[in-house]
Image (cartoon, rainbow, N blue to C red; front, side):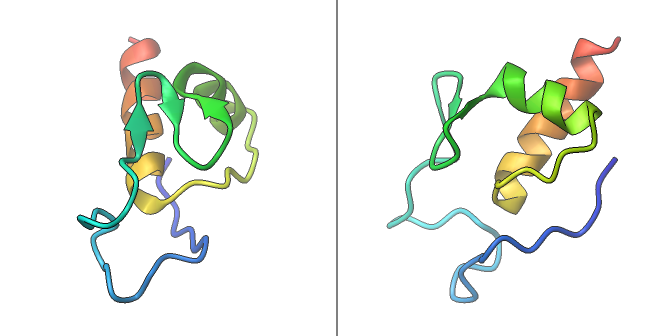
Length: 69
């Protein structure tokens, strides 16, 4: 499921989680995307190109794996 996505990641923050950045997920909302986690899972399964950071994409992929179990 994981492909390389480059959605403008900050090169000064290579792992995608930096202290000055907003958290990738607040409650069930993927910050900066306007998507809920469950909606992002549906879109991922449909093959949509999601406007997510690498960290957010990994969260969505993990949720998709567990939701399909």
